[in-house]
Image (cartoon, rainbow, N blue to C red; front, top):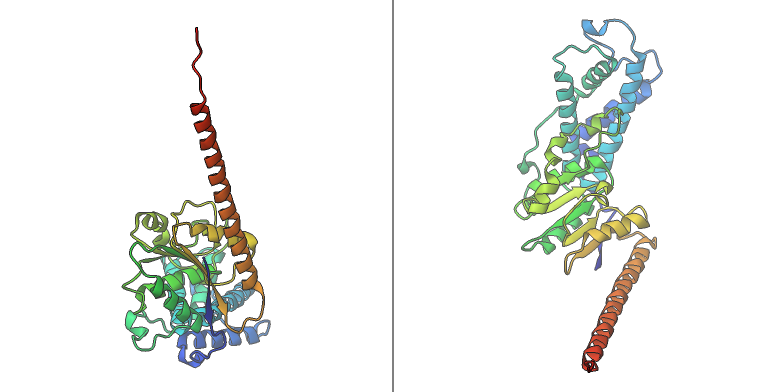
Length: 335
């Protein structure tokens, strides 16, 4: 059955001034963007002696600006989709991941990529890194977005014995952040065993951005744990739509509208257990007919399934009748 989860898209959330890491990141990006191409642009150019002190690194400067702007865009997306705590967590964990990537070289940055990472880290070191504990959410007033708040309300109503579900989101970074948040949120931490899944592909030789430096080892056993019941709620991108063996679920939720018809059908097919549910989050002030289209398709799929079942029953009944007639009028041959 298809369910609609309404949320107030334009309900006010905490101002950016209450999200210090994001506020600092926006300020750094504005400074970098304004200074790009000018002689005064000095972000990331004060490099140690083994970085060839004094030699201009214009490519590194350009790399920094691009990385910073991508990082800011993802952080702002997570802020809007999941709320202030999620943005704080995303920014601090991403910087911590960049720091680990730099430190693995033990200070011997000989290649261009290592120089770029170290220079970017110097820019981002202006943002204080604090480890965020469960108390940061606050039991009485959790710092989450209206959209995520509605998802949580829907999930806890579906909590039951042998619960299993998948939440599909659009961006890879959102997968890890949402899984962490649901694991510690006061309303969900004792109800669900959450795990992220974005697939294991490294996308060829493409460089990772600072926004992709989460530790992916945590998702290595996600599908096995899900099949065996050790995890019961997987947060995933569209990589889990097809081609991967996943146990049937009681609940599948689209945090965003499915991007196309194929995605809708494939995601719907993951909710195959008896009395399973399929849900889509929709902004209450969304006047588009998208959800109505999905609802009509759902009804057509249900009708087609019922027609197929009815046809199979009729064929089975007809075959049984023929067998009865054959047995009843069978005459033994005489010598």
